[in-house]
Image (tube, rainbow, N blue to C red; front, side):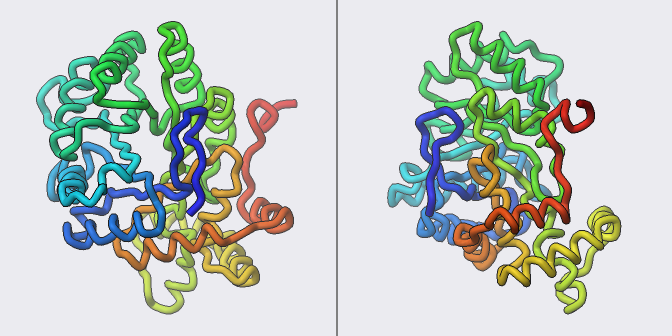
Length: 323
């Protein structure tokens, strides 16, 4: 496993991040625990979850599954850099969502209880809160740091100007502010290259891409359809048809490189200078083992250029749309 610093922080994390969103609704507890054990064996030390994860089983279930795994001991908690998120409404009662000081306090204590731990390493805002001032947010986070309940703050789904504003307000308070940003980023969805990635780099944030295979569309979907292994419906089917020519060319190129399409998609992200590590969300241990292969895929300048031809990206704004 390769490790790197998370943004400008001194924290060292694995180049692959274990996402837990499938734990509970898609993957049974015992299998989820086995996947987490296997992740540690692979050297993955960065685990990501959220208080709202749990799907049909109920919000909070995924954190409980992770917490039960920590409770087994064996230095599981000590070996993990734990990240969770808040923002989404946990109930329909007022102040049980978003980023008010009250909800930050309540949501943090509830996550700590479910996760069976005394602190969160990276406490992340799942979405920007346009109704709560940054003074209030940072004061609540400063209190949590002083109490030893969190170590770092991170964001998710922020625009570039949200990152810049958050950091400017944190500097006024002599507070560290954000150390990471989670954004959707993959070969098919590269909008963050316009302003989010430059803002993250300028402010010292590590970028954690989610949906690195775009819901499986970059994981060999055309071949799987042809072989009768996978069937798409709804938005995924529409996205495939809209991008079929590019995805077919991509799968052909991955075959020329001698790698699985999913491995190439993850490796491409690992070659992007702003990226700390993509989030992989395995439903099975086999999917986890497959994702780890991407660490051995090296893409030269010609391969990266070809991928840019298939899936054109963006120049940094404003050069993308102006002189």
